Image 1: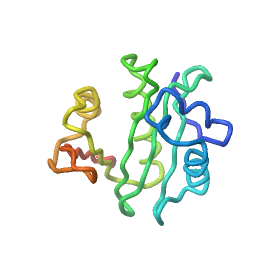
Image 2 (image 1 turned 60 degrees about the vertical axis):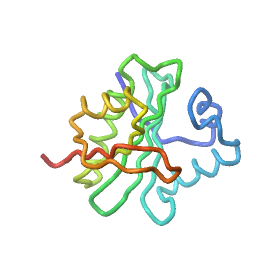
Image 3 (image 1 turned 180 degrees about the horizontal axis):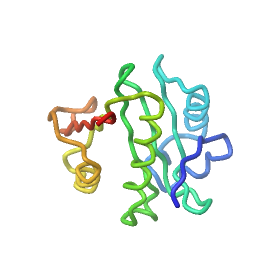
Image 4 (image 1 turned 45 degrees about the vertical axis):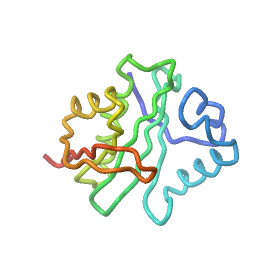
Length: 148
């Protein structure tokens, strides 16, 4: 059974085998501190560990864009990808976001990431826009109503 847990300082090593491994330990500690405060750049922010029988298999980051809209970004450890953890973890994160009062979820997905595109479509997200990311890469923007 998949469960989500708030991250803490002891989880710094657990970020290995993910894109977070590119960050320094100090950067990860800062991110964890912001998650514990539930705030980044003045908006709600939280990172939750995705656990299967007590083992951390990845993370879900949640960031509020407005009072009603939140983005949820899955980051499953490379060694656990392809086993359904992204789907199950994001499904739990969507339930959690809804319990916090959010009515819309968004996801920005690189066009060259077919696994994430398929994941979001499977979760019921709909493509609403195509644009360039902050670093100039083409992305799809997906949305999903949480109050339906």
